[in-house]
Image 1: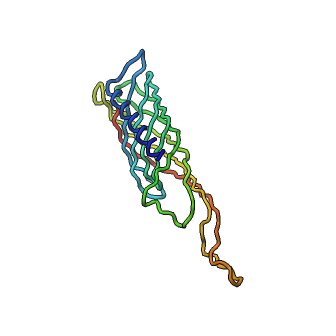
Image 2: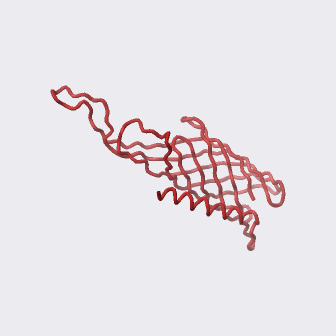
Image 3: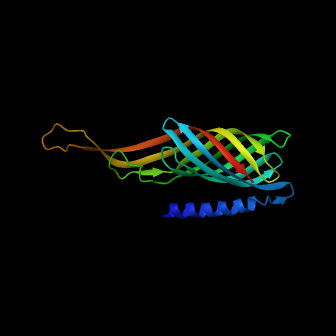
Length: 198
């Protein structure tokens, strides 16, 4: 329940920021921006959909903001992260480098069926991204951003009493033996994104 409430609140906050972002609030040399991306994740576990919104302030060629997203790779998660980026070039169109770091919040779905019956749980993990892109300026208020990046997320599955078929040869012994396990998921992906900046 608390995860669902957190997600609803986060979406409402970032939706409100997006509205303000369209007005490009200026204060001294600071400008407010909203960056909204859709992308495709590709890795050893296959392909997955990726969605994120980042809202923050820009000072000259530097930008920093807070982001939230939807990451469907292997297990569905909600990344909450800090984004820092640097732009290069003197023309309206810019080359940029960026990095993200934050936390993955696990969001269970029906198809995440476990291989064994257990009382296991999935713990939240780290989320990170490093990449480069190109910002194409459409007009004074809007730009299109194409980017590629290396994306990394971790999760940990913990619990106990996974029942494996391990028969004992003593008379009357149980046919299955409980084994406690801890599984670490270190997921490396390539991410291609296209976004709109207001």
